[in-house]
Image: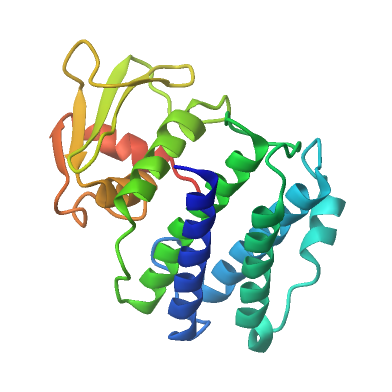
Length: 254
């Protein structure tokens, strides 16, 4: 996906999140984020949007320390002002990314063609996944994530987050997982060991211990731990089902 497509997705998914929140009491629990209520979700995503915008606009070369992060976020609003506060931060982030130069230099934490590409992508998926959380709080499913965005988000999670040194996805014995989209050009082969997983594009030389195959929008939510295997009705899990439990227990990203 192009930077402009990520920014468009951020704009669209952030608006959908606000619309879902506006239909529900702030005290509503968020089933996909245990122990959270909608208040906490809006505080979290609103804070992340402000934090990211400050990094991009300020060209921060290193991760902000706690004081700088708090200054970027500012004081949390009252419940009565929370939804407007979220909307303001979302709009400011969209504007900041839209106005940022292509040769932007700032801190990132995943491999990317450029810092601007990283932040546009990261915030698009941060917002799309949390939009699903807002939908879950309403009890009404929202629009499915576009196939292109879902494929891109699977790649960010599988090829990015899971390969970090701090990733908890580990196994005492080597195990393999294949993720295959059935509605778009995307497949990822993971080898899970005591070290950070190794990920390659494609099917892999041998059948995987577990293959997950299905439409991108369901794989996206399943792998981001926003759908259970039972809820992802179009995803076929073939092989060692215990790998699904390992994934849900160790690959969670809030």
